[in-house]
Length: 193
Image 1 (cartoon, helix red, strand yellow):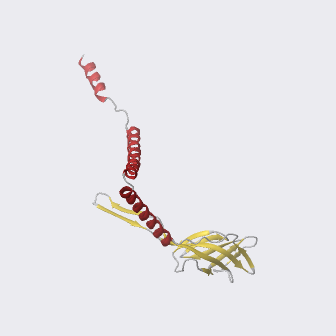
Image 2 (cartoon, helix red, strand yellow):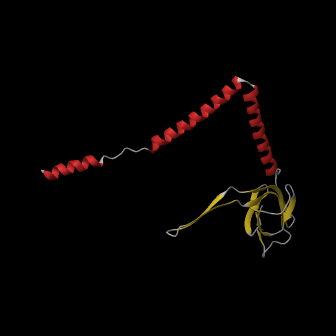
Image 3 (cartoon, one colour):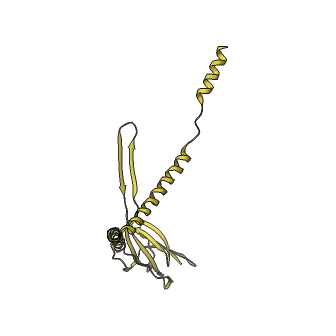
């Protein structure tokens, strides 16, 4: 059983157990609510709404409130000295489709929703980085020469990898130069005789 729902001015085909990204909804993380704007119910018997299917609803759970990856917006008008560079991140809400019900029939998801708090994940990642930096600094100061030498050895390995990558990129980029000068000289000698 599937349903076609409308939210955020867009239409989505959903089944029970699907995870869906829609335009930002003002709902709390982990909250369960119903979407009643169901345009069609499909499956063994299809029901098409005019414009909505009466008594149909899709039960969803908010699993994530976040922003998409950065998109570059670049505008240019040739020969007018006009260039504008901007970026954009769109807010979205991720929904887990828990159940679809209409006319006494219903389809329920077999899996459970995985709710992710992006703000908590981000703060944990920052705290981990800070703790790692602090541990490295303490190891360098308190650990003596051995800890400092291991940090230097790691830095050298990273630097060698970067140099090796640049060298391979340069070799791949180089093309054999054409010897146009030799052809011109040969042509001049042939015309003078």
